[in-house]
Image 1 (cartoon, rainbow, N blue to C red):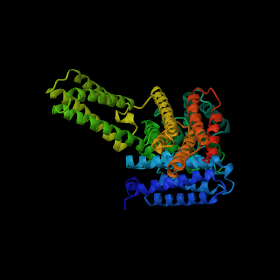
Image 2: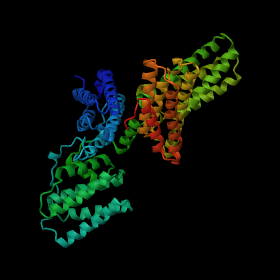
Image 3: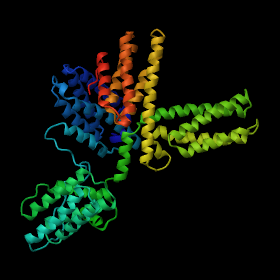
Image 4: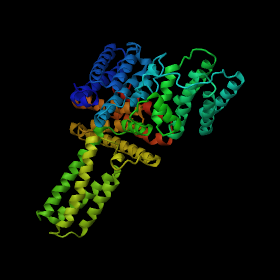
Length: 549
């Protein structure tokens, strides 16, 4: 039986349909808090999803579903109005689950570490539920970790020396915690640990040895000094104190696991790290922190469906270019008109490729288009150069369609820098504003035409594209508003074929205008954006399509 990411294709349609069904139930419950059966049906849907993911052994996704079920079960059916944040977290988790399943299909393997932030966000909404450590999915059994590999000192360390070395460690730790010269602080901590290693008994000496190697990994890789990792070294300080005092350690295997994970993740070739990896026979995690961060970016970035839509549009453009090249090569039709149309199509193609950051391909198309200026009938050499450039673009677009990767990665392994990310952010805001303006114009045309529904057919799809952009920008509250507006148009105006009165259409326009204003003002922080969103939410509630968050 096929299991894991390789078996996703067999059940993907059912999985995504089930996810969409649960998402709709949760959205309905957000609007009808008195209807506890909606929440119960959503929980049953989550349980079915978990069963399927367990069956195909997608462990990370199955664990995410377990946490979602636990949180959903913790929400009282008839007291939901005070539980907006947990419900929003559930909806966001469903959205991320779909993105994660797409990513698993593209990569042919599961990377459960990508789900840990979302899992811990869900756990944070439940009392007395600690977050899972970043080493949770690391394939190392903590119960099999030897706790006394080093030959420690035979004589006990005197209290004065221990206090001095511990103070040295704590001074370095304080610098790390405050981000005040953390590199210098880590050097001081490492020095204290190495001194303690040679002065303590076997078990605390081994712990100090492993901890010093983990600091070496952080400095050498380098690894990010997250708050979780800073807390790890505070836990280490308390554990060493307990062991030296002759008490039974409370952290033990869990602390070792977290420290050893950092060493395996760092893999920077440090001397201490190499010794520890050999001694503990550490398994390779299969990724570095840098590759994990890139995968996080892919998970949060444009999804596979978006990439496929872009690729399909480009394929249509290229098919038109090929037809024009064929006409010119055969001297069929009006050559001047075909040439003008071809020039326009090529300009549109290379500008689109530039927007996608496929600079090399765009330049090749642009150069080929420039050679058409002096083209004469019968000069097939120029047409062949254009055809070759178009074929090269088509091959790269095929990769874009099949892999659904972050576009910059298709043009090399270069990772977008802060300036590029800011530019992408600006472009996405502008695209969202354009989509909202298009939707408002369609509604205006609908009114002016005497309620001709043809003007509204593309509006739900346009708003869904805007919603996806807002989620990408982290504007989930605005995205939920757009979702409700899209539902009103699709259900009330298209499916039920109801003709809203003028007041309702004005209220709908108010909601869309509020989101446009929010996008403009959010960048400048010039107004209370929360008030603008509240206005949009009130508008949709007046239409009977209230927003839950």
